[in-house]
Length: 410
Image 1: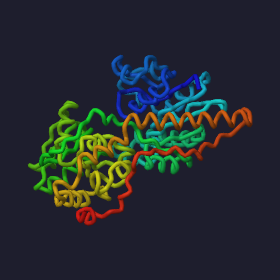
Image 2: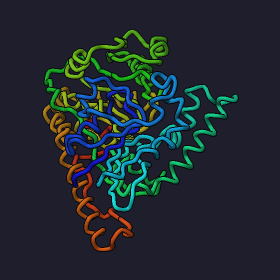
Image 3: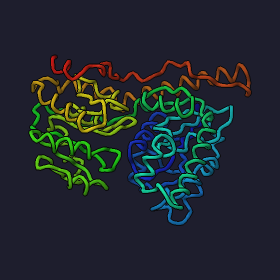
Image 4: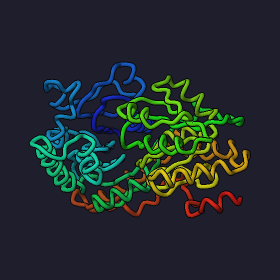
């Protein structure tokens, strides 16, 4: 395996998917990197570990720097223009289009899927509502574009040889959308930059981008009703004005804060509260790396990362009443109920080192089987690598069926 191509949707900033790319590059150094657009500065590229990025024609279109998402209908065509034929192995990091890069039967294509295109599939109606695109010419244009993207996305579902999902929740979405099985390798979390704090203070923390789907309104509303508990919210975004209008006197909205301030609050908080339905959810794992228990939605990725009754509590419905019940249960638990060291140990199972070991083992095994089948059947072989036993070894929740009363009765 000498020549590697790595295809990523777009490099607009350094967020969760770019951190996955960073670890992929550590597994397989010096790949040829492709992306629809590249907006990274030299420092960001150095962090990700890439020097040069081959971009599509969209990089040269007007206004793409600030409005590249307006070119969404062109991106299926753009991703198919990349010539990756020199590579033996193609790795794609995909939350939209990268999984559909064109490869030959001689090449192995392993696609790490952060999610199928959420705004084109199961979250389409929520996306249209948030963007105020229910009626009118623009709304119908967007609906038609998403319809076209869905047909193209489903039609190209067989292009990767192997799918890798960032959680069992996303693996289920891949099966629902593409009818393809996926291996699970949880994304890397830099747990080493956090240290646990055993002496917790009397406040809860919620943090992240204040955007609608993160459901900070749910968290703020619940704590405003539960007046005996203090809540600190760190972050900024479009929901700030709404949160100010519903926040009670026991809720402190701090706005954007430095990473140092955020980590300090994570370490000192008695609990971290997370109301979003996420594909994985890195921030709850970061809180657990600080030895802080998490109250999180018992659906999506947090169902897998939070061990109910051991590293935090689940609430089963995305409603204020369900969250209030979880807060009340948490408040009734003894102060020493959660062990900071045990929580931290669980968070370490999502480390960067673990990701690199699992992902490289998976790709190496796929390449081995690919070579064997190619040598046996020639260039006309059809790969079926679904039998590989390479699922993530990170611990997922086995206690999600516990009720709140069972937890309180520990």
